[in-house]
Amino acid sequence: MGIPGHTSSISLSQGSERRQTSKGGYRTKRDALAALNEAQGALQSGLYVEPSKLSVKTFLLDHWLPATKAGLRESTFQGYRSAIRRYVLLRLGETRLQALTPDQLNAFYGELLVNGRSGGKGGLSPKTVHNVHVMLHKALHDAVRWSYLPRNVAEFSDPPRQTSSGKAMRTWTPEELRSFLQFVESDPFYAAWVLSSSTGMRRGEVLGLRWQDIDFDRRRLSIRQTIISIDYRVEISEPKTARGRRSVALDTGTVTALRAHRAAQNQLKLKLGEAWQDHELVFCRDDGTRVHPDRFTQMFDKRVREGGLPRIRLHDLLHTHATLALAADIHPKVVSERLGHSTVAFTMDVYSHAIPSMEAEAAETIANLVRGTRAIDG
Image 1 (cartoon, rainbow, N blue to C red):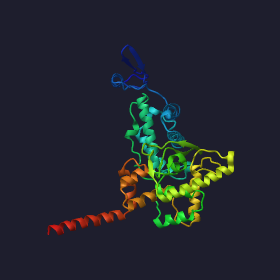
Image 2 (image 1 turned 90 degrees about the horizontal axis):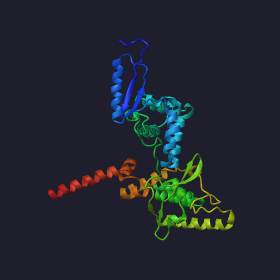
Image 3 (image 1 turned 60 degrees about the vertical axis):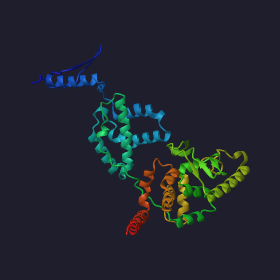
Image 4 (image 1 turned 135 degrees about the vertical axis):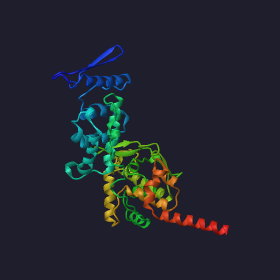
C-alpha cells in the first residue's frame, strides 16, 4: 500500500545531466518505478517530452503560427489563422496541449459539423471540417518535432471524409453559354467572360492577367500571377502549384475579344492621362486599379440574373468549360493541363460524373468492338 501523503518522484539521467520530475501522485513505489522506466526509455531514445501546461491556444497563436508564417503563402497563413480563431479556440483553446486526446478531436469535429458556423447558424461542410483537421494535424506534427508532444493525436482521430464542395456543380449547355455571351456582348468585361468560359481560368487568374502575359501572334497566354483577397484586401499572389503556372492556347474568337478590349482600354488611358494607374492588368477598374475578386463575382451574378439564364456560380464557368471539352472528346490530359490540375485522374474524378453520356458511349463502343470481333471470327 502507498503511504498517505507520500509522493514518489522519478529522476531521469542522460549523460552528465540529471533531470528530476515530480509527478506528485503515485500511489506506490512500483507505480513510480514503472513511470521512471518508461520515462528513461523515452529519454534514451530521444522521445522524452518535458511535462508542460502549455495550452492549445498558446501553442497555436504564440508558437506555431509565427514559426510557420515565413514558409506559407499569405493566403494560406490567413486561412490558418482564421480557422484557429473561428473554430479551434472556442472549443479547444484552453485545453492543455499535452492532454489533448483523439476522442476530444472527434467530438470537436462532430460539433463543427452540427454547430460550426458563427452564431450557431448550422454546421460546417465535411470538406471544411476536414480542412480544419488537416491544419491541426500539421500543427500537432510540428509540436512533436519541436518536443512539445510525444505523439500526434490527430493521427488517431477520425475526421470527416474529404468530399467535394457542398455546393453542387452546375454547368450550362452550349446553347445557354452562347446566350450568356450574346447578352453581355456590350459589357465592359465581355472579354473577361469570353476568356473565363473558353479557357476555364479561375477568377484570380483572369484578374491577375497582364498584357505582357499574352502572345497574340502565337495565340497563347501564360498564367504567372493571380489576384486574391486577404481580409478583403486585394493582393497579388503566385499560382498555388507548379501546374498552376501554365501556358494556355486561345481560340480565334477569344483573341479577337481581347484585342478589342485592349483597344478600348488604350482609349480610356488617353482620356484619363495621369489619372490612370497603370498596373499592366488586362482587366481592371476604370482607373487601372485592381478589381476585387468578390466584385468580379457580383458582376457575373448580376449579368446572369439580368439575362434570365439558369443560375450558376462564376466558378461553374470552369466546370462548364471542362464538361463541354470532355463531352466533345477532347483528350482528358489536354483538359487537365488547361485547367492546371495536378493529375489527369483528378480531372476525370471531378468531371466524369457530370457527363453520363460518356459511359453510355463507352458501353456502345465496347459492344460494337466485341460484335465486330465475333463477326470476323465467324
